[in-house]
Image 1 (cartoon, one colour):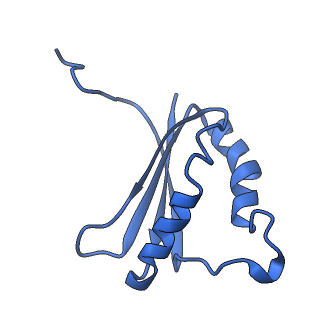
Image 2 (image 1 turned 90 degrees about the vertical axis):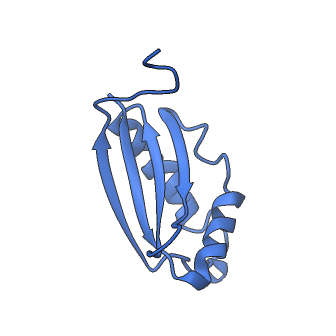
Length: 110
C-alpha cells in the first residue's frame, strides 16, 4: 500500500524564493529512489507561510531508505565544506504521514 509523506514547512516571506530555488536545484534528486512514486512542492497562495512538500512512496520501507540515504546526505550539506553549509530557508518543519486508501485519476469513472 502506498504511503504519502507531507513535510509542512514554515517559510518566512523573505525566504520563499530561496526555498524554491533550492528545490529546483535538487530537481530529480528523489525520482530515482527505489519505491518513489510522486513529488510536489506546494506554494501557499494566501493567508499562510506554510509550504507543503508532498511525496508518495510504494511503502514505508522505501521512504525510510531514502531518508537514511540520499535525503540525509542532501540535508547535511551534500558534500559542502562545514563552513559553507547554507542556512535553512524554513523556520520550522513537521512531517505528516498517511496511507493511501482510495485514489482516482482523470477518466477513472468513465
